[in-house]
Image (cartoon, rainbow, N blue to C red; front, side, top):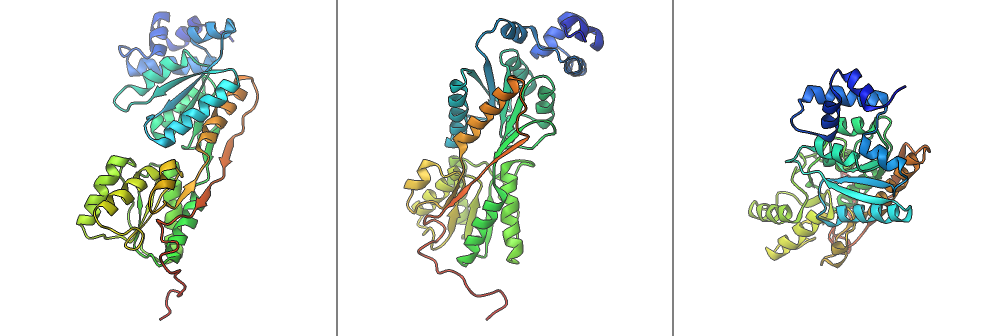
Length: 339
């Protein structure tokens, strides 16, 4: 099967210059035309000229990594793990921050012309449709997001750990629990929320809607102020990550709230700040840098023509410190229904 630009142009019913502009993400190309060109390119397994020349010339291979942002410990560790392993494999790395205010499709297509494979990290890095389209044209893996057909996925176990952590809070007598974090469908945060709900359901406790907020320091501080002003409706906060959990604990204590006597707070990731916070943050440790490293390794295997693992699930570990109430609250032993 012919795989040059002329074959793509003929199949899509456009000129070769239109093919070139469409695959570069030129905003002047209509959406319908761009989709026809992309479909033709995927069908013919056509590689844009810039990438083809790089491969034919035997130049240093490059991997692309698409992140929603680089701020915060979690994304920084993902990027470092990815770059470190790529360097060990004699592969360079190009980073793309998927700004929601820009044309993600055009940005990713420009990246594709410069790399041999792409890792999409987290749900907000790109839509499922875009990831699937790219996977039809070059090696692609995903990290901490929806498992898509035919696309290798790397993620850390979330649901069971979240259920166990929530059950631990219930054992300490907490009955008014809420999940803090934006629950995007198909994300690792959704898996954590499912585990949270499962624990409450088993304990026959009410399941409130998640507080769907951005999981960052600024949001955490504001949420703490709002909660204190509202009279602490909840007695335990199960946070989607450590960044917002640390901010909540710090701000609440600044406002005179005793954590964990008045309210328990737990997080996720075991970032460095969680270890030095007082009280220390109870959290779930996940191998974030290893997630990034595994993504680079799986891409390298695909580039070499080898099969990559369909799914790689890395284990997590609950780290008990004081913010949940360990050593302060008495374990709750009375069975529901007993007096």
